[in-house]
Image: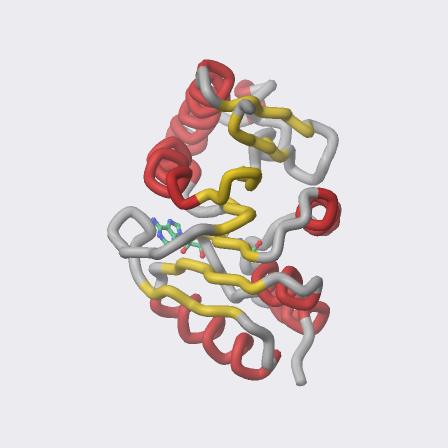
Length: 190
Ligand code: SAM
């Protein structure tokens, strides 16, 4: 059986972007603290986080659109023997049935708001939505770190997303800036 550690090592060798280890630990802690039993992940890559969370006892569904990633994710999931369902396609188009106790947003950064709007109705009553890369390697606070136009565009979208979360009346969001690449934890107000 293949475990998440082995998948992580392979991901590092092949330079596949996966969640930072500290962020992953925090994701697992949040799942445990909030009694989450199911997770929907937007952005599978090679299924490292999906398999890791399944190892923690969650039932996982995960969406990926890139054919190369899908091929590797499918292989890793099969070899892990864990309860992970891979949904193939663009997360802005796929039909997914909920509810989920945890929704993890970790796909195209420019689309975070659309992912939130599309999938938040699938969140169970006391569930949480976790979004990764809120700091984007420190560049969200320090855009001067890059002159790359595309990266600057992503930084702007991440800032807009943060403001969007802060402005939601029915939701409360905690920004854990010191965890991994910065994660946001959103839940419905009660
Ligand atoms: N969550 C993964 C982990 O922690 O191991 C890492 C995901 S990686 C940062 C982002 C992935 O999202 C890429 O594999 C990319 O192909 C996928 N992606 C980006 N936009 C997507 C979309 N609209 N629908 C589905 N997958 C998407």
